[in-house]
Amino acid sequence: MGQKPSLAKTINKYKVVLVGGPCVGKSCIFHRVLKNEYRSSSGVGVNIGLKSIEIDGGDTVVVELWDVPSIVEMKKDCQSEYLDACDAVIFVYSKTDASSLGHAMAYWNCIGNNVPAVVLKSKCDCVVEQLPDAEALTWLGNSRLDSFDVSAKENQGINVALKLLLFQMNPAPSITMEALE
Ligand SMILES: Nc1nc2c(ncn2[C@@H]2O[C@H](COP(=O)(O)OP(=O)(O)OP(=O)(O)O)[C@@H](O)[C@H]2O)c(=O)[nH]1
Ligand SMILES: [Mg+2]
Image 1 (cartoon, rainbow, N blue to C red):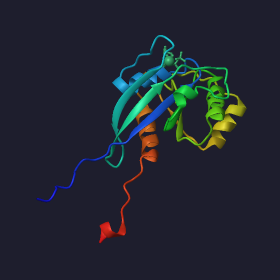
Image 2 (cartoon, rainbow, N blue to C red; image 1 turned 180 degrees about the vertical axis):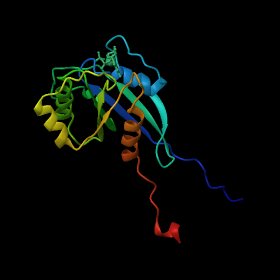
Image 3 (tube, protein in one colour; image 1 turned 30 degrees about the vertical axis):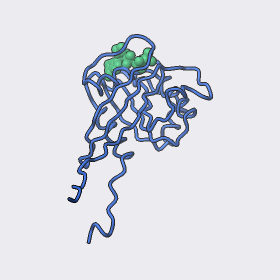
Image 4 (cartoon, rainbow, N blue to C red; image 1 turned 90 degrees about the vertical axis):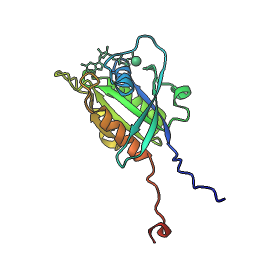
């Protein structure tokens, strides 16, 4: 008796790390993605959670999201214990903190540009804005990273940004000429 072909489909899992300066809203973004709740986390530990997300085109992928403590002093091996084997990075800075884009830039300088990444400008529900300095703005413009205005509080922009990042990372199934014949 011939074996039935397997209908099992592989689901890709991606480790995605939220990085950025202090109090930019990383933990609130983490909880918005994981539980669709607006809350932060107390303490200095790392939060890790799994979430399955359907991306455009119908594929479902699993995100292993890491919310890691911020460090302002950049070391050469900055947070390598968290960034080890990560598939993508989400750089977070805050609309209400002028220095926070500089922190994101410092992380980028440390991590390098060989990992898929997006930039989130958090707290976009706030009316008052503190403009980052020219060096950080120039970096953002030159980095070619997609940048999104988001609010964990009002649930704006986060899902779109994450789906775009995952869509870019998730290879489309290849179609061979034989399959078309
Ligand atoms: N208005 C507004 N405030 C926010 C938003 N997200 C976070 N906050 C505020 O910013 C504070 C810091 O948010 P966290 O998520 O704890 O920031 P964090 O980057 O995780 O901070 P550390 O882990 O200490 O580096 C929270 O207590 C919220 O009050 C947002 O979307 N809108
Ligand atoms: Mg936090």
